[in-house]
Length: 261
Ligand code: ADP
Ligand code: MG
Image (tube, rainbow, N blue to C red; front, side, top):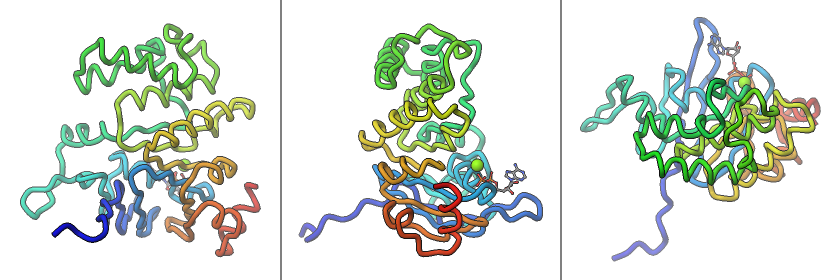
């Protein structure tokens, strides 16, 4: 007999009890966070609270000391054999990372490649996809981020906002299941922030699953399904944006918000 109610699919991201130390410094003290497919979660918190480290743990850039992060069917850093987890090889890590796109504060474009080449590089070399197909997808993405006219330009000839839009398009060209943003607008002149947030908002509308570290509370309020406040390596408070930002329950959340709003 079919079940009476539809079964909820597993959340795309499941982080359970994630711990991470650098030497004596315990930076993540047991992070539990689940992100459903299509959900946009904004991660907020003071500098040093562990936000970047958490994103890096999700994206295989840091090895965690405790707990486990699942992205889809895969446990980050491990492969499943029978009912056991084995540490992944470097090649396996690289293969799993192709499902996750990441955008950093500093755009990190390849300076010696044109915009179009920046987008096409990883799909061609890592995924070994066909050139014509990748090119079509790259041009389509450049149109979506409003940069069709810049396809043949080099990064140094673009503004910061344009470079960050290229970085987003480049990540999307890998057709990721999950996008991580680490303060994508923090390095931009104020007048360039809006164009990048607009692209991220459009992306959220397409149903992309996104974890966004940001101090842009307007964006969080408009776009996030959920806001998560971190302090000292722990999640202190989380909930719908209007609740966490509009009516924070925790003293530390209130102190943080009064500093950034
Ligand atoms: P946030 O992104 O919230 O500002 P981070 O995750 O960057 O916080 O940093 C949290 C803490 O971890 C800080 O105390 C920082 O100095 C430390 N940290 C981050 N990365 C490293 C590293 N590679 N080596 C040593 N300490 C680190
Ligand atoms: Mg950071």
